[in-house]
Image (cartoon, rainbow, N blue to C red; front, top):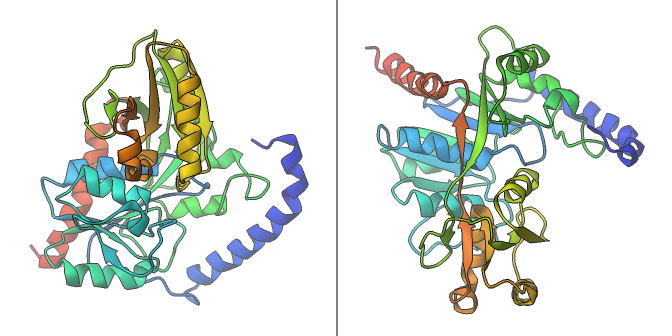
Amino acid sequence: MLKSFRYLFLPFSLIYGGIIGIRNWLFNKNYLKSSTFNFPIICVGNLAVGGTGKTPMTEYLITILKDRYKVATLSRGYKRKTKGFGIANKETTALEIGDEPMQFHQKFPDVTVAVGEERLVAIPQLLHEKPDTQVIVLDDAFQHRSVNAGLNILLTDFRDLYTRDFLVPAGNLRDIRSSAKRAHIIIVTKCKSDLSNVERQKIIDELDPLSGQKIFFTEINYGTPYHLFSKASKPIAKETDVMLVCGIANPNPLKAYLTEQVHTYDMLRFADHHIFKMDDLHDIINQFEKMQSSDKIILTTEKDAVRLQKFEKELKDFPIYVLPIKHSFLFDDAENFNSNVINFINAYNKNKHGN
């Protein structure tokens, strides 16, 4: 929904929408070319500017696929300090590949994690470097139409459905609503856990899927926090006082979770993908030391954690914990979703080999 002041930007949104509409029309009419690879490619994306859960959904896909196939992820590597194509290795840092790819690399060290701004160029490079790869997951690539993925998974936030949003700068959409027609699967993320069947059907009716499009619903589940450096776990107690260090697009679900879980919390909020500097570190430490509680911790997200690891010398003795999250499918639909993804890969390989 629009905040009142954002209506002032509607003329700019209309201009932007016209540009995006023309671009999509050129792709649809093949004046601009989308390349299709003879290879199973899964795209995870959204129409909005961040905050729909793309990173945990990519991790979910890796989890269900990594024991069956040789999986690779390909991301742009937003805000990294390097350019061009690269594959993560043991010496790689978040500054070299970006925070989200670094998170994938640390959580799934046996999975190939690659970055490249031009996916059309990066995919052949990835397959050349890692010829045993059996499936590629494109992170945040739905709006980049130069590559036509075989399976498009589109995410939309339960509290900010793309059907109710406007294009930037008046709203949060970076692509026009009709682009959702290109999705094979639409996932409504960050739902309330007690979403009813009636509410579910109302949302499906509002999204108005095409024949063949499948719609799923997920909630975010938070795990047990673990220390940024020692990895020791620490359940959050009701009496714990938390200082939240957060640089993500939409912290509202996390704030709601902490409101229910802890005594009090303070928050130092940074821009999405913020690269932490020494001044930020000093602010974090100073703010934490002002807290009077005897049971206090610094809590951060997994995405922020990979950008704070460079301060190990300064922070290793502090109680700084990372809060993991994951998608959980509602209405007992996890197996249904998993089967759709696995069947896509298997059917592709069957057609490829003519069996």
